[in-house]
Image (cartoon, rainbow, N blue to C red; front, side, top):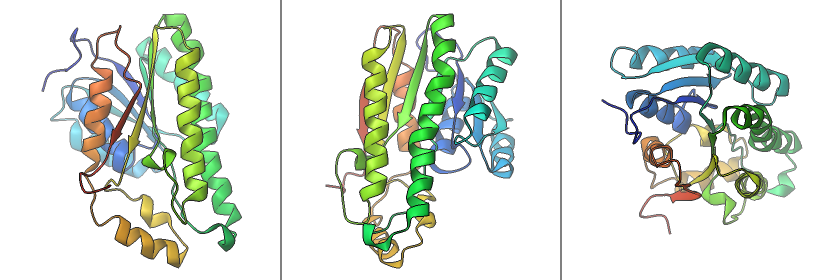
Length: 249
């Protein structure tokens, strides 16, 4: 498969949270389209499997790299290494996220803290690492995976929605502050097939989520949205895409 980029140039793309779900789908699709994808996550065994399944069939490549986005120095080091090896970094897909839902009165404070660390601080660490690179090389693209939860709140999801609204707001602020050579896109998925629900430890929230997730779209639906945003001409900035099941109202 050839690249869908309008000038047929391969991009160097760093994807966080790429070991499963949306991140893995984004990495696979972009590699299939001819891009060089640096797929990062904590679960390196999953990343190795992802790279192995796409190497022989893809026009591009997937490079597995271990990364915990809550470690600011580690994020900066990976970005620097990518630029040193490839000469540039064109895109950050800030996708890493957690969703251990629970009611506030369950007081699962450790889970709240972990969501804030990954969903908010992890995004900020990525932005802090790539902005100097994009400024020096005269361009780049930040794509953030937010959520439909950035636009609406439901019971058991208060903290999660708070982190995703923060991700939306931070990304929108980045768009407004950035030079036009830096494009910024927020992808807000609805219910998507993924492992996110498996992190829910609260029984009540887990039961609600089983009903809520009865209608879900494949992760590649979100990957296609990312591909669309990346494939636009340099003077077109896709600000936000909301993608969700037709049955989710």
